[in-house]
Image (cartoon, rainbow, N blue to C red):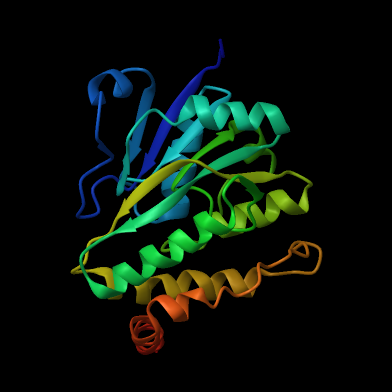
Length: 238
């Protein structure tokens, strides 16, 4: 029997999509942990507010637009204990009817297939993820400069630089619900965060990471849709 104390942290509740979908046993699962929700403007500041509110040694970051079928904490905690790492994040599948969301879901599926077990995370790892609160505090928490996106990439980079590892575990898969009406507008906003991220990179701050080889099966499965997605992405970032 695993014994742990955990709190659930949800930044920016709402966002135009249902807050934390649960397919089964919702009330029992919700009542198992203390929850904190932040509506503070700016993702970096919101995450810091939640981090400061939490008192438990473990925190589960759970974004407001994800759907879960079961309590992910026991599974993620088992992996954390086994490998003695600072954090473990779940895999994800994007949900939506639009063609560009179908492409995103296909890309997610490729990632899940490529890493069917556990791998080291190099960047985004906070949509549904269990962390040791102390380790997040050791690297100074989140940078509030990141008010749109990039705060998760930034803190994982700093953790890697301090020798802390975060793992990606596909024993838990969350469904990521996207607001189809605001998708491209938000995507353009994300570009600001990624530009800020690139500007903060320093030799002593950004460790060398190994990138997975490009999986060309994406083009075999949906070549036209993928090309249209990349074109729209390029237009949105102008």
